[in-house]
Image (cartoon, rainbow, N blue to C red; front, side, top):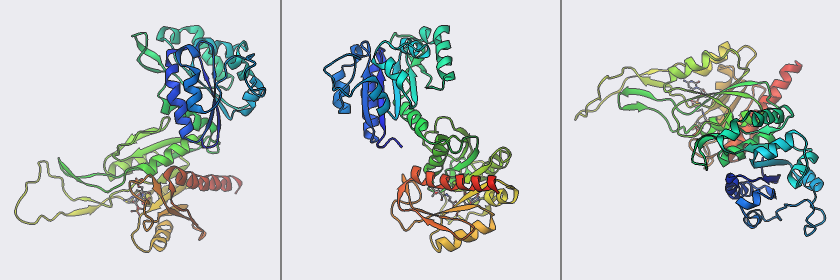
Length: 401
Ligand code: PMT
C-alpha cells in the first residue's frame, strides 16, 4: 500500500523529532517517496541534512526561502502529498491547525491539503493532559483529521506518563490504514488463526506447525479496510494487529465455544486456524513417565467447528481453508460442499514457500459455482487482500439479491 505513495512528513519542535530519521527510513524502505517540512524549532532537534540524506529529497523549511526550486511551495507540496504526517506534533502546531492559523510553511501547507492528514502528538505529560490541548485535539478529530494518541512511558523530562511518540511501526501502520480503501466499513468479521494444542499431560500436547501468520494477515487487512475484527487465536508468538479484538484459546473445544458464542453479530467468518482433528482421549494429571515399552495413545475426535458453523450460518459468509497433501482441488471442493462454505482457500503445498510458517502463500480460491482462481506465491497480506476482495463481492451480491 505504501509502495509508490508520496508522504509529506511535518517535523515540529519536540525531543521526539530525533526519531523521524528512522521514520523516514521506514517509509523509504516501504517504497514511498518522502518529502520533509521542518518547522524552525523542529530543525533544532534534528538537522535537515539528516532527513535530506535519508529521504533523498530537499527538506523544506521557510515559506519564503528563495533558494528552493520554484515549484516547492505550500500549494505544490499539498498537491504532491498522498498523505501528510506530522510527527512529532507539538501543542503549538495542533492549536494552529485546529484554529486555522497559517504562519509558517507547515501550517500553511496543511490549509491547502486535499489528501489525509495524520497527526502524531508528543509532549510532556502535563501539557498533553492540558484541557486546552485536549480540546484542540478533539476539534482536530471532529474536523476529520486522523490523530494517533501518544503513548504512556518514560518521557524526556524524566517523568512518567502519557506523551511519548507512538512506536514508529504504529505510525507506519496508521498511515497504511488511512490510505486503505474502506470497503469493509460496518462489517463485523470473525477470523480464527493459529494451531490448537491438545494436552496429554501437564508438560506435553499434540499440535501442528501453524504460526498464525495467515489468520493474522487476514485480521490486519480486514481491519485496514474498515472492518470490526474479532480474532480467535490459538497459541502463537506474533503481535496482535492494533485495533483488533483478540480472544486467546488453547484447545479445539475452547476455539469451538469461542466461535459459536460469537456467531451472532458477525456477518463474515473466516476459518484460517489449523484445528487439531483429534485430542488425547484422556489427560494424565502427572507427567507420563518414560518406560521401555512402546506407548500407545488413544485419540478421540475434536468437534468439527466449521461444519457446525456451516449448519448455523444463515446468511453469514463462511470462508474455510483446505490443507491437503494430495488431490487438493477435489478434496477442497468436497469440504466446501459438505460444510456449506461460500469460499474455500486451498493451500498449494507443491509450491515452495506456501503453507505453514512462511510469510508467503500460494493458494487457489474455489467457489461453489465451480470457479477456481489460482494465485501465485505472494505475501500472506496480499493473499488476505485477495480473499477479502471476494468477500466484498459476495457482500455486494447479497445486498443486491
Ligand atoms: O498459520 P500459518 O503458519 O500462516 O499457516 C496457514 C495455514 C496453512 C494454517 C492456513 O492457510 C490453513 O490452511 N488453515 C487451515 C488448515 C486446516 O486445518 O485445514 P483442514 O483442511 O484440516 O481444515 C479445513 C477447514 O476446517 C479449515 O478452515 C479449518 O479451520 C476447519 N476445521 C478443521 C478441523 C476442525 N476440527 N474444525 C475446523 O473448523
